[in-house]
Amino acid sequence: MALLNLRHVKKHFFTQEHVVEAIREINFQVEKGEFVSIIGPSGCGKTTVLSMIAGLTSPSSGQIELSGSRVTEPSAEIGYMLQQDYLFPWLTIGKNMTIGLDVTKMKTVENKEYALDLLEQMGLLDRVDDMPHELSGGMRQRVALVRTLATKPSLLLLDEPFSALDFQTKLKLEDLIHDTLKAQKKTTVLVTHDIGEAIAMSDRVVLLGHRPSFVQEIFTIPNELRELKPLQARNHPTYQTWFQRIWKELESLESTS
Ligand SMILES: Nc1ncnc2c1ncn2[C@@H]1O[C@H](COP(=O)(O)OP(=O)(O)OP(=O)(O)O)[C@@H](O)[C@H]1O
Image 1 (cartoon, rainbow, N blue to C red):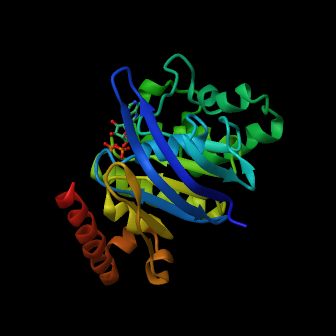
Image 2 (cartoon, rainbow, N blue to C red):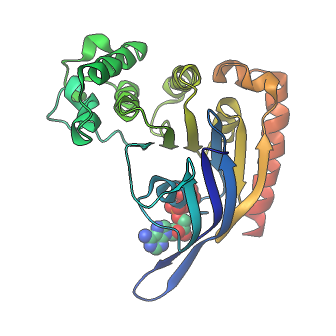
């Protein structure tokens, strides 16, 4: 059984004047341990899909299931990380990283040690007593990831987590996060505008059509790229072929919108 299952998911937004049909119908599954990216034209509904998976907003119809149970509200089972780090400026890195453990009443000695281990993996153990403003954007995103993983969610949702960073920091972070998530066999869904990032980090890439969106195509990334770190994958000859293929598909969607 797939860990995550989206079946006949539709979404309308009701504003005071009109109804916006955001998602016509979406069906896809994510297997345990898989890394799946969602890409598509601007405004096609990528964030809406992620918010529904997170239980922050409900589908108008259809079902989203995690481990066979219907997702109806946010839970510690699902970690959600955004473009902005949302670290609390008045709390130290150590306090920020365990805030999820506090809120979910999971702050055991073992879980605190696990969070510290993660912080060490992110190369930031010596910054545990620093305040967020003392860290760079890339460091802050690493802390945000530690905070998200600290509650040991079975599913990790990433919404453009690297898009506010400079290109070099983004590439380094892609490698670090890819390695961390692979080592933990963490099931992940990433929303990104960056086709290259999707190819370099994912097992599969879901391409959504323009609003009201639907699954246009699902690409399975070949093993020769999946076995590599994202930066190495970006330099592999096969990468360019896949980039062109997905780019053309996205271009054809943009031209019909
Ligand atoms: N709360 C809301 N009320 C009304 N319309 C909404 C609401 N949230 C999203 N929409 C509309 O639904 C569509 C999908 O929005 P969404 O943010 O999910 O797209 P996206 O693919 O993530 O966009 P982008 O690529 O620009 O980040 C857009 O047309 C948006 O205007």
